[in-house]
Image (cartoon, rainbow, N blue to C red; front, top):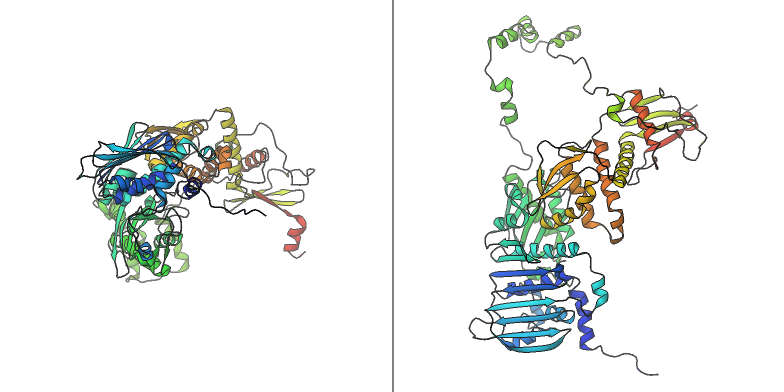
Length: 617
């Protein structure tokens, strides 16, 4: 039998290594920018064309390389950072993996120009698919200028599986943002298809956060500073009221390197316990400095997952640091014995007392009680409680007014028949046999027993089908906003939102881009309350960030479901029988009355026999 095991060629081995390190254009951006940082650069430019598929160029003013080092940098396992195995666990720099440039060169056409400051002539190297095409002396400015062209040109399958240009550029923005946040003392510039997207001067962390994420975050930043024998924690967290429904503005850095860690994220969320709404995410940019021997960054090839020597200790320190910061700046709940400004500004407190007020108080019921009893603690007889009506004026009409049926739901064109699932022969009972329970459940009789309808879920199904019809017919009704609000989002979120603006317009949202990352909402679907448009936009963004590849076709169904859910929650109680019947009619005129768009049950039927069993009959 012939031997079947053989060594791979360097060319194939490099392409396999590239699959671990260079998963997409953003991976190459990360590796090249980290190399520039390790080279001591104070200015770094990133130039992108066609989301990195055509060109990724990183130019820096770092220390550059000699001709020999320039050639060796493209060899596998070549590094200037490691001499012994122990060095691997003391790494504080970024680009120490030998596969980085070798992997990039294995799947792209690479050109590098570099020169050291103390030499007159630099070096130019051209490599295609690990093959060195050219190396020559070259006149160039001090530093390194590295161009990656036609990424995956020799691996068509990898290039085919890249996402859309918008998606790939968003991943590049993610990497750029993380690196720029980690090094505020370095100046960064980003050009995309010839247009400058960011021009970040060297400065402090707060300035860098504002430059990257927008000026709206500046007034909502709370500084975090804590130093212990184990670690140092510093950075910023956001005020609780600014927590969003979208993830993305949460950043952890361990010894200057961006990492992901669910355990640390949980520590932050626990520090915000009871301060933020459910399913919202506070902003944070936090830097942890600790002994490299106590953290393992080699868990994953991208170095974004870490393990700690003592997870629980890190957790407790992080949680305590954030709680202390929130309490220090009067964000967390605390005992406050001063009178609230909301109370001091009330007319009864701030306005001067008139003669009419004094006369009314002297002849009022409380004054008479104190006079007759001659003591402040007198207790009156039960029948005297009727005089409290002088203190409170009871409204003649209830707070929640009965609305006309047309204000709740338009009368359906077709009178639907109420059917029990699986029993099509059963018809609905008369409209008068209905009862609204706690304002949330509607009980009505059917032939087989009783039906309980969850009102808000019924509205969800009704609104979803209305919006879907509007979307299909492109005739969404929009109500104009008198003072259109403008909302700012992170650059990568703004890219995603622009993708769905045409679809949102079809259901009544009139949203236009204003500035680089701002959006002005000029109109919303009829029924949306003021302020809800931002929550809907955040819900849509959260879905877009985490949608699976096969879910793109269902994107608008999700968007419509989120809008329907918001509209359902803002409906007033229905107390008139006509409005209740209109709700039932339209619900059972829909395609799937038994479930909400996200699969929750809208109603249940309790059999007559089950009701009798409950009463022991």
